[in-house]
Length: 219
Picture 1 (spheres, rainbow, N blue to C red):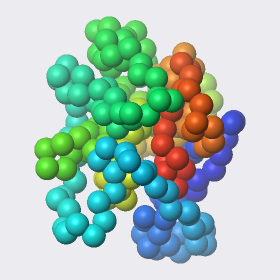
Picture 2 (cartoon, helix red, strand yellow; picture 1 turned 120 degrees about the vertical axis):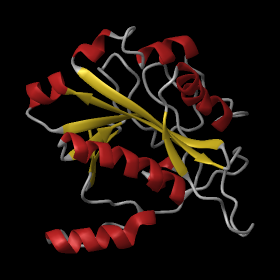
Picture 3 (cartoon, rainbow, N blue to C red; picture 1 turned 90 degrees about the vertical axis):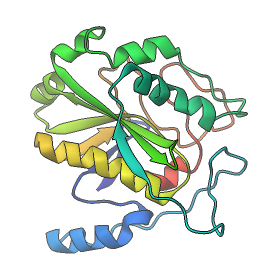
């Protein structure tokens, strides 16, 4: 299912995909579980966005997913939004060094009770999307849940890219025995969280993520 909790958080059941780009797959899964047909979604757009939709321009190269493991990979992972939102006066970049250190086990004490993976989506060798996955064992024990947090979610407006990113997140969630992925959430409430669903013409805030309007349809 896809449901809103709090103000701007979404819970995504790893066995029930509600995004329009995966409607056929979701309908098959829903029928198998007696859940009915997922809701339809409105199409989003990203006029003037670097790396946006390129419909009608021939066959696109395949999207590949690669885990960001090295520090160099993590720098590229954290720098991607700066290119995605280039020219957008409302996007405020985060501190690169601090973001990279958050994903280093020897620099972030949250790894004492968390595990995390960062995935990059690439097409023709260029980054076209990213997603971070965080297993917070302490939070799951406290709230009696088996959830995997998703964070740092950014992508061009492309169904294949989004599908590949969430497939990677959901695959790791199943491997860990989780029943759902939810977010955007970080290691704790001290991290940025939430998805913007309105107010795209306002400067982004320090404690919430900024995103393009098409995220509402893709998520």
